[in-house]
Amino acid sequence: MQINDKSGITEYKAKANRYETMKYIRSGKSGVLLPAISLGLWHNFGFVDDLHKGRNILRAAFDLGITHLDLANNYGPPYGSAEENFGTIFKNDFKSYRDELFIATKAGYDMWPGPCGNWGSRKYLISSLDQSLKRMGLDYVDVFYHHRPDPNTPLEETMGALADIVRQGKALYVGISNYQPKETAEAAVLLKEMKVPFILHQARYSIFDRWVEDGLLDALEDNGVGCITFSPLAQGMLTNKYVNGIPDDSRAAKNFTYLEREQVENNLSKIENLAKIANERGQTLSQMAIAWLLNRKAVASVLIGASSVQQLKENMGALNQLAFTDEELKLIDKNS
Image (cartoon, helix red, strand yellow):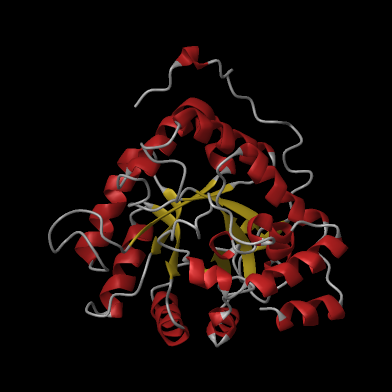
């Protein structure tokens, strides 16, 4: 896919002051500093989406100091299209900034037909990353994740594949996603034995979804691994959208795959209370939800999605008020 030069979008030159307002956090005990807020390309960057809109979002993100971009082999739709669109934008706008970017991709979910196109075998992981690099037009990614644990493949095989990917120069670091605490600790031991830099665990985490506090954050801290959180806004529940009920045009009203009406209805009173706390702090609910995560143990970055430049900038406002009083934290806990 080509970007039409007659689109009205001018040649891109990054803002000189792009690093002045972003906060950077060390990932575990590694040398990697990640932006407090990272940009995920799960939605809004597939072939079904407006390429120029995605291009504007990526430009705005980098101008705000967001250096970490998160992809996966099957992001789209269709599968692979987010990586391909990113590759097109990268070639046009970001190639000269490659050494400033920290680019991630993953494999672990369904990608192509047949027994070799899913889960965590050596065959699948190495083949998938080769395809991803081709789609994005990259020589390497900065971090490559196994996207979910595979109950039928030995962990030694999966971690061994990640180790060989680093040795081949196709990734600088490795990560895992959606692993439980015990599996995470076991993976850390294997990777340490192979002298592979394991720096990130990507996990779902929000005020409404705190499963990682039951052992995972401790396991990460014990092993010097950072946590990068996804779904920080609980599929939109932790935004002002639902403060006054369920709008007809919302995800919940349409029983969106990841957010059902009943789920929102059961949390409406909590959403209203949390919005009041945020308002008293001078923030939107989404800004407070992101700021809350950035105060949690082991969290190295909060991964957000953005459907517009305006939404991206609003979420960046979380960095303007990161401190919480003990009373605020107690009230948030009461409504979580």
